[in-house]
Image: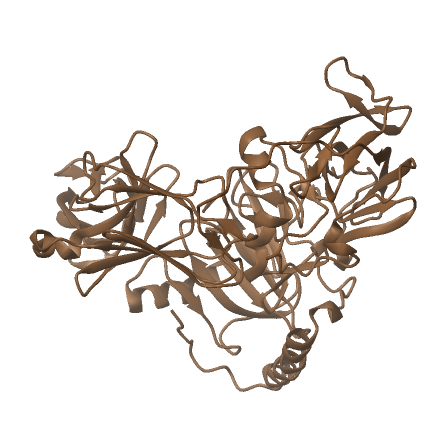
Length: 594
């Protein structure tokens, strides 16, 4: 939703600043389009966004589920409502009030073309909040994403612009702080912020991958993990069985790849953070290198090909792969030979070296030996009858009333397509169709179609496509588009799906007030709201038919609204209206006494 503010005051400073914005942003945007590697990181331009001790609970490039962490998790001493300051002069260009993800988020665009992002906030500063509330009342939508014109809200470097919080997907009070250039998230530690890090990264282990049908690692056709041990300041591989240093070289045959499990820590804090550079060399010749300078926001889901997705799912350990899959479009790789695949052409002993750096170039090194082993004789694999989905081509599969449409560059590698089905049970209105498994990551959404029996046409607006859990129960519903006797939905995970229905209204209950209760001791009303189908879509609270701003905290399922000061003494009507994604609506009315 894009909403613009009142006209700017006509003064010299504002005009000069606006001209500077337009000229710099025009140039910066062109440079981003042509060469994102040309980004420069001005040191000293930005200040730390809060007061108190400088500390981070997370850093740029840290590995997270389905994304790289795009900024710094700034510590706030474990408390909320700390002052948040503008990191430089600029203007408020966007405020996103989503209850999920980033939570309440403030965007400030600066004359040098960068935008700073402040997320998981509780509230904006009084000046900004006053303008924001006007917008909210105009559109009567609680979690809108507001855009502002450059002349709407100008801020100065160091000005208090918000209060820190714990909103959205945050698990503890902090400020998520980013520096962006257009769509690109930049590493804030490259801008000279006062974060101290004198601790080198840690290496937990490596994983070695056979990358062809003839490849092997220590006479095994599956990937092998090797732990590390640190002795007198140096890392060595060791055997997990007896925790002694691994005395023998790793024997490999055929094309192989390597991966490393590594983290960093910042001085004075125990939090596990991400590393900056990983380099892989064989006999001192670098064959792989990546650097976490910046990453396009739209590419962050490629973490699922950069890392070992299935190993993470099964063993809860992150691995940076040092070889590239077919569909890996990350721009972080600087020097990768042969896509990171290594083939030994002799039986000599070779030294593999992993060198890992943090953003302050503290480094850690791991050396280990490999040599070519013998080819394993194995029986010919059974002929696979499953169709092949080429990673860069369209693919469509139909079975009876079910169709899946897969666009190019959805899979990270060309993949054999597997589909099974079983009979419907419970709230399933169709057979349950299993498409590959949740252990197969995808980059893009796939489109699912179900043909609808004519007996269900009267309920077509309530039909959903549902993800089915291991017990055969629809656990997550997706809203659908009905057309030509077919419903469709886009989903971003593979697994089991069926045609289902969502006619259940959201749940609403009173928390701190009863019907005909007094509000003499209250400043806010709280309600529990929840939906078990397509999810909450809109929630509104009215006092005597006047819409008021409400805030949803999904972690506690609590909807909070301030009691308006305009209420006079006596009874008043409060109405709570909650709708889900399928337009099922619950309405609760009560009387309060002031």
